[in-house]
Image 1 (cartoon, one colour):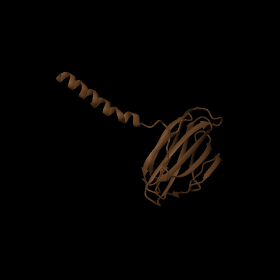
Image 2: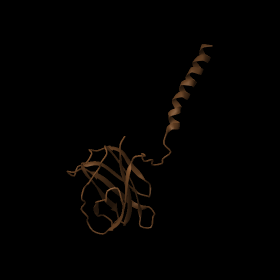
Image 3: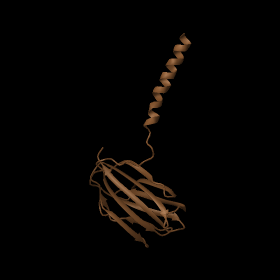
Image 4: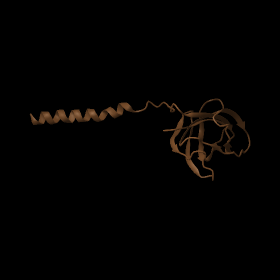
Length: 158
């Protein structure tokens, strides 16, 4: 009887711990309700680096063919996130990687991701920032082909 009771208790304990597995995200990028979103799309030649000066919280599409230095923008809430994906100019994968750096006002790298050029969205989330400080992005194309980078960023209150 004790062995049976122990087996039942172990089973109940195991099943109670598995509930967290069902709470996992399904891979969708879900932005907070109160997020202020901005989207940028840039076409970048191989092996060159560019910065982005966005029109704050607006949409901007731009093709750049030479080095571009950015101005800074301010963030009006304490948390920041960005997500990006890159493809070749026809929308497919390319050999190589690209890098997105989120920089502070003195040029310090706050966050950085270097990922393949494959059309998959990569996200860096819950980055703490100082309200009304200056920030910017810097993009790098480490491939031998022209790529299109789609970058969406947003700030939000927790």
